[in-house]
Image 1 (cartoon, one colour):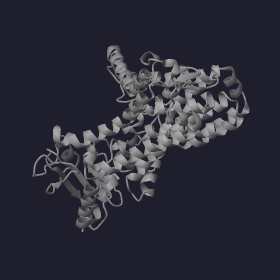
Image 2 (spheres, one colour):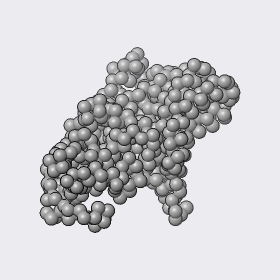
Image 3 (tube, rainbow, N blue to C red):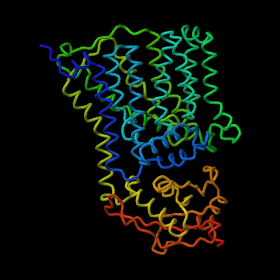
Image 4 (tube, rainbow, N blue to C red):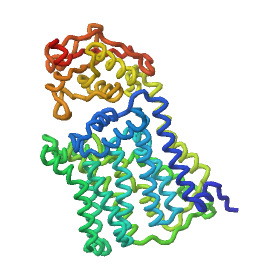
Length: 506
């Protein structure tokens, strides 16, 4: 007798319900977890908020849209970092919704939900999703671009051209990887008869006009300021080093896909005593063009961006691992054929649940154990609100004016720039060209606070900070209790005040 679990029946009968249960549960997990255990944001979130506060048309970090949305979400949440965490999970939900809609159009709703379940195990959609930035915002926009691109190329729907142009323009305003991603879509269209037929219509011209209108202000700004793409070839990189770097990137991508591989192995017919008795999920035969579309965008982006990352010796994929792996689950489902057997159902459920839970358990374990076991600092354990409030209040008391600019240690200064009342501007004094909204001259005019990590109770500033700010008079270092101290000493921050020029002349 063939046994079919409730989960399988739900996939067959209510795939949309399964989609929302799975995606919203995972989004809720990665919203609640950082909100509960993080006292300061992970990654470069604080720096991105500092850039978003200025509403520049572009910066050294790339196009502006991701930074603007971060600032809007932060302000909408009452100047609370929870707004940015929520924005990250909205990006996650929209990405998977677009992939589900694309999968439903190509392989049907039942196989599309299987693709979503597989893609959810990719680790790039787990703990790294809370580190909001251009790579996170690029995921839903690229997913929507693929969805509308298929509607134009594969289904011949002329009414999808406008949406495709909007998505392409927003992608160009989000990530430096957008030109290469859109080029892949254009090459695929040119390589197919249906795609060429759609490109020869007048709709293509109208779509290009919409894209130009969206991107023109940023393009003009980038050309005038010389920002360009911000990408350049490194010097002295040997072919051997490039090859090892490429293999390193491919290894990281393979590790991110390990969950999919494990589920495929568990579901293999060789591990089942009676594979023919397993429940099956059927789909109509997919359009050959649809299969090529899925394979192209499941394989080409990881391959192209891994090679580009190796050539540029970049610390991470320019497009972000989540963006280039968006089609991985759908690619496996398409390759599996029209009939997919779900063998060893109990094992599949347990393995899938552990794969989803493992990144969350890892984050909890490393956050709680690292201060005790290794005695080293966890970046997300800094008491951001206390630090920001202290230095803003100290400056206000000494000068009678609100804190306008903060400089010094980049990490501490970025934390203060978002957590202090009235959100002071950030000055990266070691690389002032990266913060063009202010300068040393403006800093001396408005006054501000300079911070650094104090090595002793004297609070002597590091030599490089002392050289950039001659005549600095350090204050008594301020100690802060971390959210979880463990075996670490207290966080001791050295600081100095530069008084506003008008107040100094009184």
